[in-house]
Length: 292
Ligand code: SAM
Image (cartoon, rainbow, N blue to C red; front, side, top):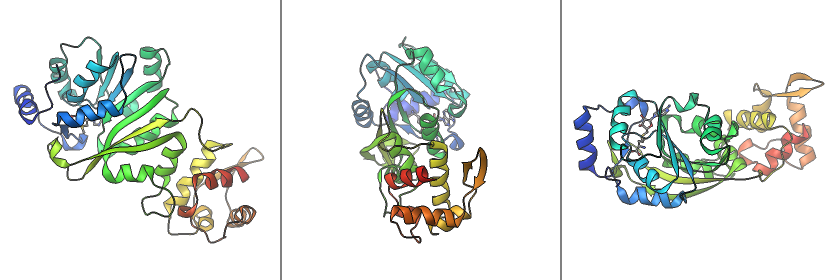
């Protein structure tokens, strides 16, 4: 039975193993069973599922995952947590613990090995210092996955689901919305963690599209343009791209984008030459990138 999601049980395990929290690994452990049950429900986990958990900590969420899924693979960077996980997960025979940095793990290979290449589900209370590289890595390396249900910093969850015309809209919003449908499930206050984080948190579910909602001819160019547009978000799109290192391929060669080329395409699209990147929708960025 899952038993770790209380302040007392968490403190006891930590004391028993002489564990010290490492701030550099973003270690804030969940101590609220109600929140954990809601995460499991939001991830729609069934006994058919293979789940990859990023950062199991002392195994609080892993216990719930093991009870609901067919198989769980948990990747934890902190070697001091491995003996604790072996202790807290000893009664489950469907959990594999990997001691590694998630950013270095071949997750597509893992999905292949553990789930025959069929889509896995990702569930995690993420280490907040690497939220964006984790999410982008999962999408860009084409890991077969059906959904990602994660606890992230509240501001980051907001950024993932907004559209143009808001201050939070940026490269992360566009990337997430190109690959998946984002839905914020709930906000979670600092008191639900040990130790308490200095920021509010939210659980967000990203349901992977089988096909992106817009047609993009060259994803590399599309994302390079988006990144450059938001690197200097207060500049016009024409100036931001002309000042950036965004490149396009022409006659088989790499070429920098010029201001005139941007303006010509904006004219063609019926958009103002002084428009900022932050005003363009996902569809407009796709069209803009395809026109190069
Ligand atoms: N899942 C646990 C829970 O909910 O109580 C712990 C969540 S805690 C916010 C984040 C976890 O990710 C920590 O256990 C931390 O050591 C681990 N972690 C940090 N960086 C990591 C990385 N690069 N790769 C794998 N795990 C990492």
